[in-house]
Image (cartoon, rainbow, N blue to C red):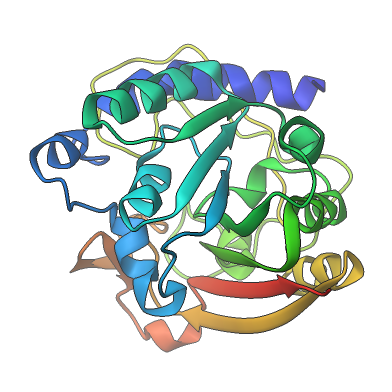
Length: 273
């Protein structure tokens, strides 16, 4: 694993137990209700459609709540992540729930070598995944290699315009790169995106943005065909603190003229035969 990966893995390893214990991930609701789904997958359902009987892989699955939700919808799921602490939480939850999911530890770029090529009908990825990847073309190749001909990529992700905004000050101002850069941004943030009293020691991360055109081009170049691209005016976290309104259901939107800002997008593509 690269130095970038080691730095980011240490950050995720430290946060995984706090995330699993937080109200934000709602593990108690999974335990209490066999039909409960994660907020992310509930948002995805209208575009995701029926996944019953599909062989699916969730890339960068973290503690597995979306992965388990897809399994509850009838898919045969595998979850892949580079953080052993995250996977320990995911496996523990799946075992408690009696949900059959294979959780596999691997760097994203090695996924097709570890899991095997052409094994899956569905590659799923959720919010906050692509920013940890230095090479979007390499990601597109991995997605294509994992899928059978006719298999589908489904992803909802934070919009690269949103990620390029300065979230430290009032107003909308582009401060950070929109396009992929050779060197990462290196934020040093003491907290995390869920409420917790835990004080973390691993505070540095290495992150990259990727333009929407770069993402689409990476998939097209890997033999994928774009079948859907929908931009949304909400995001499932308070991305711009103090400037957003809580819409309920875990979604947030810019309070002042939200039509100015693409918050997230859902992209779908199939592997050409």
